[in-house]
Image 1 (cartoon, rainbow, N blue to C red):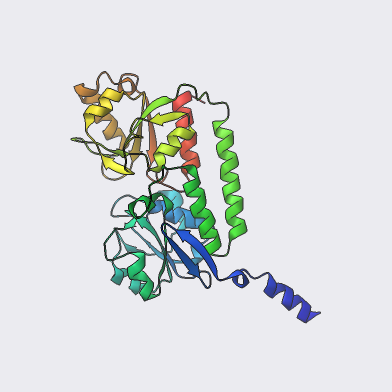
Image 2 (spheres, rainbow, N blue to C red):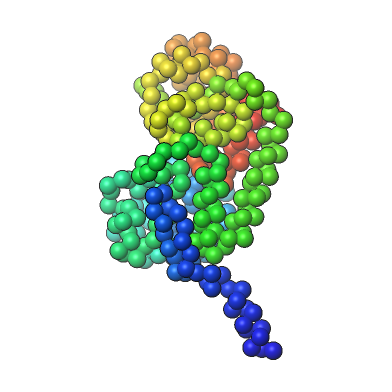
Length: 309
C-alpha cells in the first residue's frame, strides 16, 4: 500500500511533466525542470510572477526604483526580495545572484545588441523568457492584444509547472473582462490619446503597445494606432489635429499625473482639443498600462472614464 501511494505521489509531481518547451519571441526555450532561482525585471513582469504564486521561486528583481516605485500592493508581495539593479541589470549583477531564469523583455530589461540578451545569458546557465509585447523588436510585428498578457501567464505556468494555476487565472481575467465590457456601444469608438511623458514632444503608445488593446477593449480607438511602433515620441501637431476626446495619462516617475494634466491645461495650443476642453482624463498607473495582471483593472478604469459605467 505504501509503495502504491508513493507511486501515485510521484506521478502527480509536476517535475515529471518536464522537459517542456515554450515559444519566446522568435525562439523556442526548453526547460528540463522548473526554475528555482528566478529574477524578473520591471513591475509588471514581477506582478505576473506574484499572480502565479511564484514568489518563493525568486531570488530578486531588477529595473524598478531607477524608473518608478513599487506601490504598496507590489511592495508587500516582494518585501523580502532584494532589488539587484535599479535599472537594467548587467551580466555581472545577474551572475552575482546565481539565477537559473530571467523574465524580461526588449526595452524591459534587455536591449537588442546589449550585454544582457537570451544569447549572452544561455552560456551562463540562465534561461530567458521574453515578454510577448516586446517581441516586435526581434521578430515580426503584430498589433497588441489582450492575448499577449494571457500568453505570457500561460507560458510561465508551463515553465514553472503551474499550468492549472495559470489557466484558472487567465480564465478569471477573461470572465472579468467580458463582464466589465458588456453592453458597450462600439459603433462610434471614442478617440483616445495616450500621454506617457514629455513636453516638447510627447511619448505615446503606438500600434504594438498594450494600451492600444486596452483602449479598444473599453470601446475606444487609440488615435496613434497607425504608429508603426510600440512606444515612441511623436509631434504635438498630429495629436491636436486628431482631436482626442479622452486623454489617458500614464502615471509614474518624477512628473506626476496631476502635473501632466496641468501642463496640458495651461498650454494654449491644446485649448480646442476636446479632451482638454471637457476635462476628460483617465489616469493609469505604469503597472496598469504595461502588460500584466492589472490590465483588467485598467480596462475597468477606461470603461468608467469613457462611458461613466
